[in-house]
Image 1 (cartoon, rainbow, N blue to C red):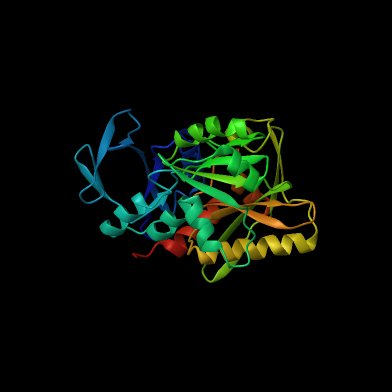
Image 2 (image 1 turned 90 degrees about the vertical axis):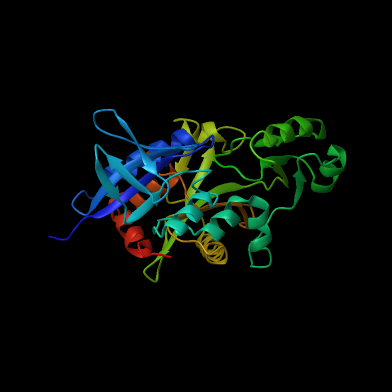
Length: 330
């Protein structure tokens, strides 16, 4: 009998996305084949990295060697499956630690994670790679700026976003220059840097992608039709606030262009594992890049699981591929 792979399923995290990350981890834990994997779910919250035993007792991870001792029995892990959205799972911090521990993991590497978590750095990286990008203004905390000048330069409406955050926390769509200061302050509550972008009108598309075992997996594209002003946190995770159509009803040439840009973004940002790249497609059929999610949501309400189902694949089969491709020390 082949020995099971010992997996630490890393969940929770320290961002506003913590609850969604816990839901994602629970769904994937249930999907993994117990005949192949010995899975231990570990909740990370600040310095508290713990496993909760069936009897309710909590046992702390030894961060010196990434091991766990439960009732006197020491467990070592062969692999880490990261399902933490936001910090420390999506911003490169956890990846750097696991690299030092010599533990292979499921997501993009540290450098790629740092890059893709930072919106303006991602855009700078993708510039000149045949990917359409909205014009923007970048603000650092404490800098002086002029709302009227920005509105005149970029036009209205505008999107105001934290530079390093996720799930649309702190994002505001503003229609007047007078609304900008409050929106910028809201974005600064999530990040020390803020991105103000021109509003590209059109249809929002979520494009799941993975390259594994030398094969490109382009998931069926999802159209995200929010019933709110835009696809904010409530629209993403509250039933009835958005329609998500998979596969999207789009022209073949638009689909081909979205697939091309998705693969280009994945490769340029040196991604690994499952990634979701989001775009706005104008009425003329021109896609504009929005953001790249290096650890996309895997909760029951998330987009990628719906795309995987539309592909005729189970989440367990998807993660079999991910684990086989990434379970080698870096």
